[in-house]
Image (cartoon, rainbow, N blue to C red; front, side):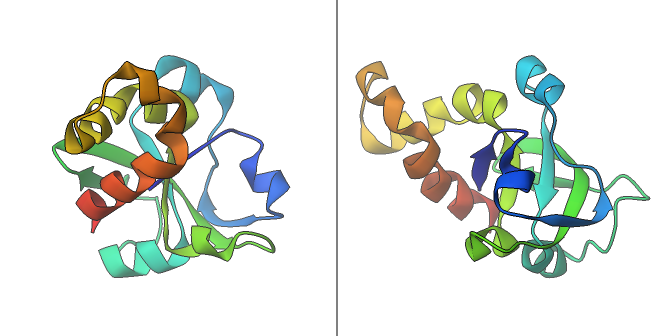
Length: 123
């Protein structure tokens, strides 16, 4: 699982196969939405967003709003579940901190380190 800003798609020179990418409103509101890499979508049996698919990550339900087709940079995104950075910072901090016995002083490490803990829950 990766938390991303709305600029990620442009930064990695990505292209969508279906749906839409994250925008700043999803992050601001902390919406539980996700964009899947094509490998993640295939593993989860999701071929498109027309039927409003949703996935569980741990105990949390996420609406899948888009599926990537490809990226030029950061090929690890092809197998990822991508959520808005605003929700990544608030939604998974407690899970990550509890799993490591840490407090808020380590919150600055969330984006990279939380993806490992949350990614395991997504598998």
